[in-house]
Length: 160
Image (cartoon, rainbow, N blue to C red):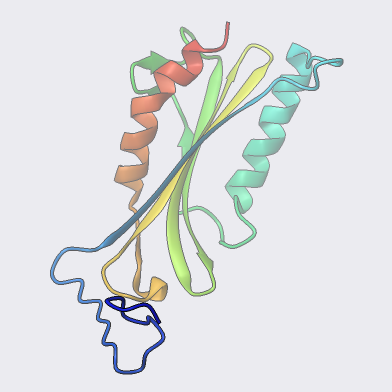
């Protein structure tokens, strides 16, 4: 052991994590995926419509292998400043809570179709007030929708 440096494995060393009143951990994940088929086999409009319908049926039943049916689901007429019929052709939204190893997270997912491109925007997260992930509280539906509303117009505008 070098002089002046404490060995982290020394049993006399005391370590403490006291989160206090403010949650020390806020997990947030945002993902945006574009699906237009493979480069060599670009999806046709009909392929995109079928893909969108298949995703909606699946997401309305169980959007995650780690969670049950969504607690919120429905068609999207407007997301952020983007409107259906003007900026995108059709869309739906689901919100659900999933659990992995006793840790719960909330996730909102907006799936939009613009022409032959299907855009999936997912926002998930949890707040963990203590040292244990299982004590975490999933983000709520309102938080997920607010985050998706912020990024959706730019995600849609990227499709030309």
